[in-house]
Image 1 (spheres, rainbow, N blue to C red):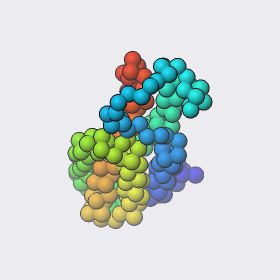
Image 2 (image 1 turned 90 degrees about the vertical axis):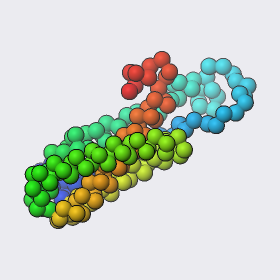
Image 3 (image 1 turned 45 degrees about the vertical axis):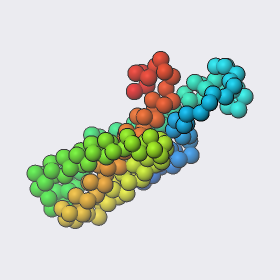
Image 4 (image 1 turned 180 degrees about the horizontal axis):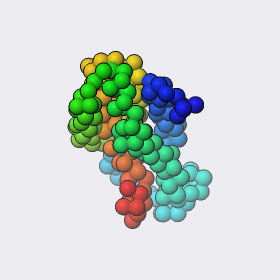
Length: 193
């Protein structure tokens, strides 16, 4: 239905709704991995199974939670400007917002710049607020921005939506990668990245 829809606005709305679905997966299926403040070490039972986690070792528990995070990360990549959105955005911007090809290039560059700056600032947010809250913020902002592409009929509203999209994507991608590193076993972090 959505693929067959000729109106890019419907495709943008579907894209925004799918991001909200990914957001819900993140909220309900992935736990926080924020490092705890330095404390004196508590007595440990060693690297063996933890009764509180159903008998799984800490590494096994982290690996079980990795699939929802992998889904979030893949969806961000497939839906973003490097994926489906990159194919839909130029034609929508030119047809519905009346911008030129040069304007489309500037808007896509603006999104990349906003994503870069947001990912730089996002590092301190990840340390301060944990991994989950910035990821939820980034996904929510990205979904709202994509929803904002659909009704945009001029350059300025489209530019505002593009900047919001870039900020959301920069924060969400950085948070999902840090999240993956937190959950990956120390010896296999390169594989997980």
